[in-house]
Each structure stands twice: as structure tokens, then as C-alpha cells.
Image 1 (cartoon, rainbow, N blue to C red):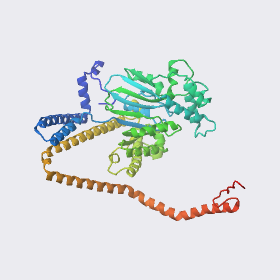
Image 2 (cartoon, one colour; image 1 turned 90 degrees about the horizontal axis):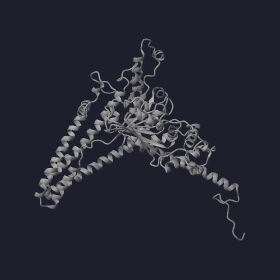
Image 3 (cartoon, rainbow, N blue to C red; image 1 turned 45 degrees about the vertical axis):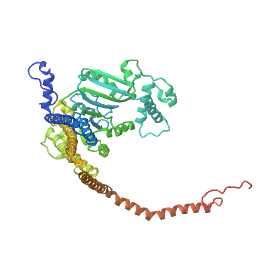
Image 4 (cartoon, rainbow, N blue to C red; image 1 turned 60 degrees about the vertical axis):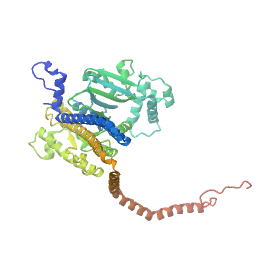
Length: 543
């Protein structure tokens, strides 16, 4: 089936209106692995319920309180397992420079062309936007505003940027600070002090709940309504119109949560996090991605072909993303190179000395070359941070070359060659793998409980208990020894540099101390009114 939606059968639109039963069956056919997980989940749930009933039946037969308490504990553990809750939400964070095409990429992934506002090379997204799916039929957006305390804290920093004596790395920061202040408090408010601004009444209407809820039946209608809240604004004109009033709220917008109906494109439970552009001039945007990067299960470092060939921003973001692995939340990272269709065939022919290659083949060849180069760079860096057998190090695709424009237009590349479907498939595989791991954990815990139930009759013998105690003690001591070995392996690479540093300090400290003492002694000899500590002697009261 082609990407982009179900294919209509017949001549009318009525064929698209399927019954709920047919729709569910259709989705299962699209995800056979998901259906297999669901089957195993139901089997495990049935086994747990049957085991709990049997334990409840045998409970009255045992008179010893210890045995009864043990059976009751195991029954409660079995009942506490909930295999129907298979996977936690998977956050996919899109990080990249301003104008890298993150919003355009996300629109293609969810198959909604202009759902999020897009722009050429300028910053278009002004706040963090989260997109997830639900079983409802409506499209919703929750716009969360900064609290009064949060805004005052940010306002303090904005006023400091407006200080003429304050050194700013870039005039863009001062211009944006002025735009934010004037948007909330009116024209020429940027010239006022922090105390004066705190005493002023905002020129824009702020809802008391600090949350704006939008609901629409279609994606286009919701996109039109939420666009002014998400899109980066220049200084809006002073106007009493509702649209201009909305535009003036942009400095207060903290984040936007968007919910769309279930789609075949992305599994339920996947949350995309679109972060405003980073690495350019806006320090506040840099703080945004640093705060959000540790919340993501999957990290996509997004950059365009034009910038990735000469810039270093993506390498910095990749290093920050790799640090997130150490916190335990992030489990997958990829480099997504956008605008892969942008290529001048004549320039490519001249560079490669190939006169007969067409644009289509040149794009695919250039994309493959960049993939290999950047994959080697990523793998080399990952292996410094992670074990060589880590899943992310061994995965086949670390780099994706994507063209959202060709996904919609198809002038040169097919949809498969744009690699948008490939990214979707990667999400599905990751989602299914998480479900399998979760199900495996439940099954393992259930097997442990069943093993304990099986050994309950033999636990009454003191000799058997002593043997198991000794076995458990030996097992734990062995694991502790293994852990010590692993810790030694972790510290081994830094021990040699530390020793070298200590040796260097021992060699140089005499010279450093001597130079300091010479300066102090010389100063004392030159000034007879000072003592050996360089201080003037105190006069007595009778002097």
C-alpha cells in the first residue's frame, strides 16, 4: 500500500467509511508484529489469572501462618502484574539548527503537509511543540503559558539584555528581548526598568488559567488556529483585533501539546517533541533543548545537507545526545539529514568527472556517500561512550537522508527514496521492541513467582533452607566481585592520566611556590613599613 493514507476502492468516497470492526482488523493486518505481542499478552494475562485463582483455592488448606503468608504474598504479586500496560510513552526529540527543517520533517512523518508552521531558513517554531495520537476523533491543542513567577524571572533576564552596559554576543538577542517586552507591555516598554514593568498592566489579555484549549474536527482548521501561537513573531503591530492579540502572547508561551486522532503512520504512545532551533543566537532556545534532551527515548539530530557538509553544530548536538545515554532514558539516536533533494546536477558532474549521470542517480549516490561518512563518525564516537555490543552501535542505520519536499511532490525521488517511510518503519520497530521487552519482563517476573511457588513445600526443611541460603550468599558475593571488576574497567582508562597529572604537579610545585615566595619577599624588602606577611604593622593606642 502506498504511503499517505488508505487507497479508496470503487468510485465513491463511501468506501473510505469503514466500520470500527473493519478498521481494527485493517490495522492489525498492517502491524502483524503488534498482533503477535497482543496475543502473547492475552495468554500471559490468562495464565496469571488462572494461577491466582488456584492459589486462592489452596490457601485454606495450609495451617502454618508462614506458609499462608507466603502464598498470599505470591498471589498478590501475580495479581499486581499488569501485562496490558505494555510500554511507557516514547518521546522522540527533534533537535537541530534554525532552518534545518524539523517542522517540515515532522509534517511529513505524520502525513500532514502544513500542519506545523514552516519557513525557509528563519526560525519558525518559537516554543516546544509535542505531538501525540489518541483514540478520539478531534484534533486538540493545549497552549501552556508561563506562570507569573516564571515570566518575572524571564523578564529580569530580558531587562538585563537591554542594559546598554551589558555585553551581548549578538544584537539579535537584544532585538528579541525588546520584541518580547514590547509585545507584552506595549510600545517603548523596552526602555523601562524591571520594577516599572512589574508594576505595569500587560497590554495583552492573559487567561487566568494560563492554558488555552483549541479543538477542531480537521487538521487544517486546528493548524490555522494554533499557527499564531507556535510561529515565531516579529514585533506585532498595536491592534485591537483578536488575531493581533494572539500574536502578542508569543513571549508567554511555554509549550504546546497537540493531540491528533490515531493514524497508521505512527503507533499510539509515540510523542514527537519539536524543539525550536538551536546553536544560532538564542540562548533561551539552547536551554530548551538541553532541558528536553534527557526526557527523550529517541533523539533525532536534524540538519540540512547544506549545513552538514561544512558546519559543526550537528556534531555538538550528537555529543550532547550521546551523553543522554548515560542517564538511562535515551535508547536510540540518529542523524537525520534533510533537504536531500537539493543538488545541482551540473556541479555534481564537474566534481565527480561524470558527464552522463542524471539528477536522480546523483542524489542517491551523494546521499549514500554522506551516510557512510557520517555513520563512521557516529559509530566511532558512540564506541567511546558505550559498550561495543550496544544496540545503538550495532544498528544498521545511524543516518537517514530525507527529503520532505520530494515526499509530497515526487518530481525526482519516489516516496521510498525520500526515506520518510523508512523513518516511520524505524519508529514502529523500536515501539514493537519496547513492547516485547516489557512483555518479557512481565514473563520473567511471573516465572520467578512460579518457581517460588514450586519450592514452597521444600522450604519447611531446615537443611534445605540452609543450603539455599548458602547458595544465595555465594551467588551475591560472585555478583559483587563481577561488579568490582566492571568498576575497575571503567576507571582503568583514567588512572594513567591521573598518575601523569600527579607526577607533573610534584615536578612543578617547587618552581611555582618559589616564584610566589620571591614576589612576596621582594615586596617586603621594598616597603620597610610592611612586615613579612606584606601587611602594615598596627600602631599601638599610645603611639
